[in-house]
Length: 112
Length: 113
Image 1 (tube, helix red, strand yellow):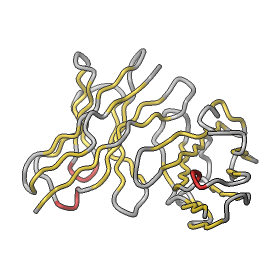
Image 2 (cartoon, rainbow over the protein chains, first blue to last red):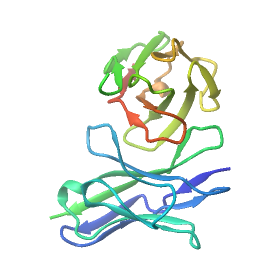
Image 3 (cartoon, one colour):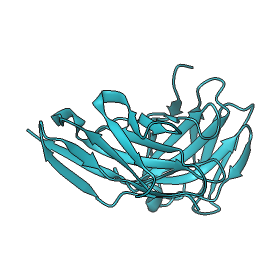
């Protein structure tokens, strides 16, 4: 069965420092992988996706994610964090029936 | 429409009452999804529609929950005999096809007293 895991409930970084939010996956076949973000009191928004091609995927708001097949990971990264990046982040993978399966979410706190 | 529209945005009801939550997806999107989120926590999958049929309704918590989609468009999630543990934000999303990017609505916040 397709699944994703986010090993950290919360990540704390200082503004200006690089950030990483971790995601590992378990899929059969070639993976499609997604990152979504939920800002406080707002709906979920799509950030980026990996289908095929370059292992480094660039998305919205300066975020990028690195697909690593050998480590079955798809970590979300940003070179310089902003306080406004503080939000709840979800990675996701399509299930066999077509539904999108989300990880448990990671809260990112960026301190000034 | 321009986005996914959900109504009501807020619903307070008494335990034991029935509630209906509505989702109006983006025009032309064939796939529609319902998720539930409690207290800013994770996303719990409820049901997925492709057109008017539901290939996966494995996430519906009990037989008090049901959903339908008509005309390949609007969907209604119905909760009968609501319980306090049903209190959550119910999120609807649509996509052009399975595996495509999901666009989420703002959610319907349900509070059962």
